[in-house]
Length: 312
Image 1 (cartoon, helix red, strand yellow):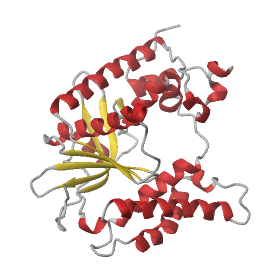
Image 2 (tube, one colour):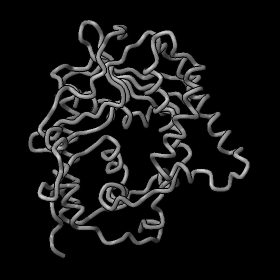
Image 3 (tube, one colour):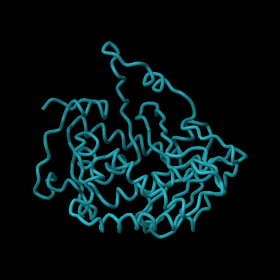
Image 4 (cartoon, one colour):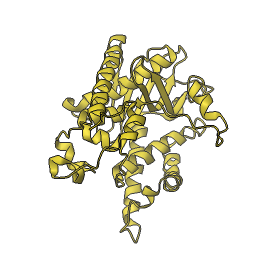
């Protein structure tokens, strides 16, 4: 499916909600800011499935993590691809993408001070130059997989959310949504890594079905295609979701949220070790590696999960 209508809209949501209206109000000393409803994104859901303690440290404690060149490169490439589609049809070329790398990197450094600290020992700028070249190489791969001059995305970096009855708010940011002339939806997510091996593909499919479910609930249209674009090795993973698959994903989210609520009420955030521990920024706080996590911030548990831990 290809969205080729040059005049397609670029709406960032399917319509205003009560939360939008509340956020748009003028906030004064007498008008408290609305509290964000407890919710779950695919990334945080995968955190809990990977390791409940990791979920806690990221979502509740919100302990800062050191900058990662790989993660920052992913953010930069996503930003370039988002802004590439601001250019008119015919001008979305590899040269145009490369020209966006430096200004988008400058903008990201302004927005996030951690980006400015990514190369602390790079006096001559060589490390940063090599890193920027690696981002440009990923963009080159993108052009071997899709022709952006044949696409007119409806939305880019689209914030989506839906409230599950008796469950959490499901929320996330979708890289791109294409809408065909017949109204069919394609949901696209860019990955700057390599396509996962078969035994690890479940996490990626869960993320895309999660987004597909949210858009289905928001718009009443079952997405025709869920597409993962892997720039690390030039592969595309496509799935055509069914209603039963997305309903199973909804049930999985409900079950997962119940487990998160139980962990929050009992203040039981067990570590779960795996090979991924080698890349974890919180090993020094993990009991599995001789560390001690800080006391759980009880008020943040209530804000994040919507329940309060039982008294000790």
